[in-house]
Amino acid sequence: MEVIIQPTPEDCAAIGGRMVRALLDRKANAVLGLATGSTPVPLYQELVRLRREEGLDFSGVTSFNLDEYVGLPGDHPCSYRFFMQQQLFNNINIRPERTHVPNGLAVDIKAECNAYESAIQAVGGIDLQVLGLGSDGHIAFNEPGSSLGSRTRIKTLTRKTREDNARFFDSFDEVPQHCITMGVGTIMECRKLLLFAFGEAKAEIIAKAVEGPITSMVPASALQLHQNVKILVDEAAGSRLQQLDYYKEVFTKKPDWQRAGANDDA
Image 1 (cartoon, helix red, strand yellow):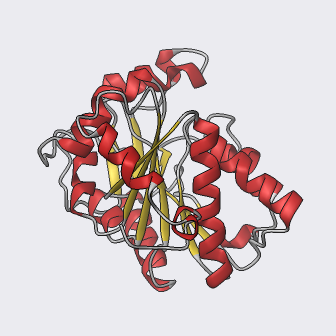
Image 2 (cartoon, rainbow, N blue to C red):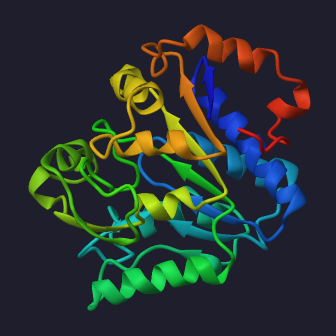
């Protein structure tokens, strides 16, 4: 695990963008795992810039999103399919048929979850997975107490998560109570993980996830066991890390080619 602290979310996004570019430069048909919410927006803005200004090619890329609300159609303004279309897919040259988001309207949700897992396996797994971090330590929608070996499945959202996400809806009551989400075990099989967190509100949970005990009550703490994970945080989100100065020293002493994302070693 490598912790990278930068002054702003935009600085973190620039590093994340270089890592994505390094991957696509050596593997044009890479499989990207994508996240939603406000946290990955700076990264998606950077990827759009790389496409428009530097010609970064997404035509061979396949993508899988972490999750989707149960009961929302893909054209609902609060669905994650809609979010991805607006924030990224419509603004890069990725092929629509290669973008995958769980179907929140699936009649047979268990079958949908199994099919999602099979689709990931059919393309050889996910090369790079983008992650955000919930204020209670969840990754994707794996709420506290989720099995660290879990697979794609339906989950009931906690009241805390629904309150956090209510800002995207007209009211709290409109936030769905259920979702389809990749499991922690599914995420841990991705070859590289990039977790982003910004702001003082995420400082305590970042410290628990990175430096605390590995526990299902903080699902993100499972990432400590992954062999290739980068934690990208701004100064505020990293402010409670006990080894803060060490993390900064490690990054500043890296050669430029490693900082650019060409090195896959965590």
